[in-house]
Image (cartoon, rainbow, N blue to C red; front, side):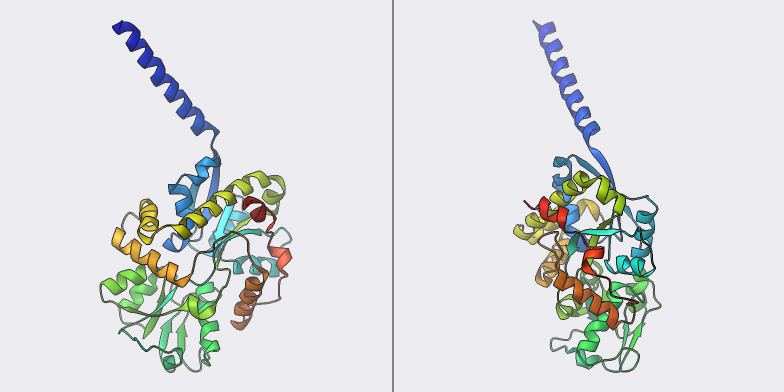
Length: 329
């Protein structure tokens, strides 16, 4: 009897092991290159941590590009199946004359995710008060800098004339430069913004995203060949993202924070909860992967306002919502 039980237990164990291995073998690996590791992309990390990709038969392997230009290079070189980056990069590639340009298949965030931080708290902050000041703004031609410039002009301030906007400091060094004494203000993304506030190194005085309005800020792109030859994979990917977008919309800030923790091991639950609260208040996360043409046109206005738009790119040339719409059904 004991021998029978031992054999039975062994068979059950081997069966479970086989089933588990078989499940792993059937998952299709997707190489995803993200522009940077940021809590701004919470729905993406939720899709992984909550198993939405796995339920679609996908295993996501993330590489952090370290800039939209680098993520675009990886996508064009075939080193990534899907790239998460600013849509302005696609506009630039088309304006360079590349016929085999990538296509935007989905949108993750819908406004600028940076916060304007000052050296003291300013409960009565007004953009007009920045006249004569110096802001650390980011890289020229990048969305953070262009959106900031757009907002400043909306409030009657001309960068380089009414105030100085520094564009020569690397993105990941902006916080350190401000802490070291450079500038009167700096634009920072989360979780750095919350960490600065918690340590009294800076104070959030305004949201650039709230001031600019809805702009397709971070998008998923694929090559034209991937779009043509592998629409099933793209649909599965976007369905997982859409499920995550809905999950985030209905979850508490703490639940969102807990879902992101595996991707930000150095951040505390307190910090990540604060981040989720700030981005939710900002209405930063898109509720669906489909991009709206009205928002895209505002993006072109932002780029043009910064003097970086060589030629307007038609919506239908860069954006294909077909699969995103199908994934939402």
